[in-house]
Image (cartoon, rainbow, N blue to C red; front, side, top):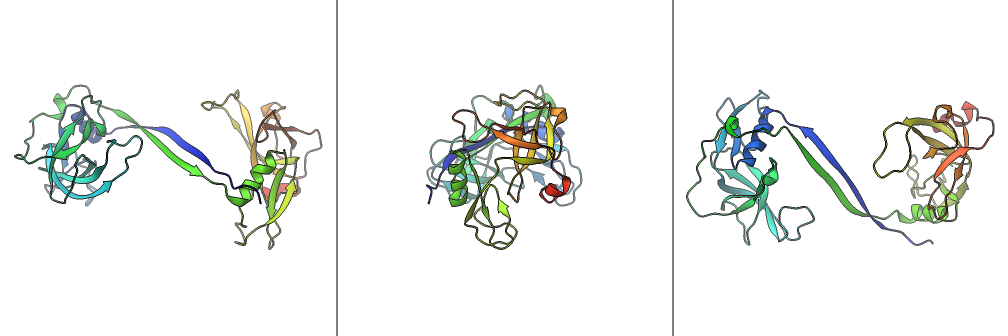
Length: 311
């Protein structure tokens, strides 16, 4: 049995969005140390503000300032902060209802002990850019309720009109028995799938179980190395950190003997000459763990009836 592999993986991308008038005013206010909510038609003040009443769905835009002090309504303790979180030492995630608000705002609370009903206040970040992180965190507070500054959204200077929110997921991936065997075979430039004992389809890459029949798979079957292009797309946008000139073709390729098409890049042929049914073979580079791309074999194109069930 091959060694079960594992590796750290990171999925990361920046999410850019524009802001409507309500969110723009809220984040602009935070930059100026002002917390704004929005008032509904029945007199409730929502913080953080939204553009539509969650009860009536009416559009709302009556901005009102609330105090930077408030009360903890509920909380959860974070004993081991992760990268990118507001504080590096243990803290609480708390829902805080600011004085003057009817709803609670979620943020970090820097305290050694926390309880529901605890009084807190905003700790402002030293450098503020118009983001929720302009509130560095909340901290315990036993003084008088804070008072609004009286500032208006219109007096806050240049508005914040958009934000970039980085999204990142760090995790350890283990491919399991079936895919570990698949990866081990690729290191010897072979492609191995597993056959379902019920429907007899050969799945590449193998999953350890048939997704159609739901039964375990164990019989290994070597497929390819040649295959047939079943369908494809032309890529016209250059990907970051990918040293491939555009346009290029990415295709689904049904390797000979496989019951499922896998994807790969097509090279060795002009992009506008790639077609369904094109017969291809893998091209390996020195030290590579998988084929760099697939190129035409020179064989006649496969008949559509041969691969139509693999589209």
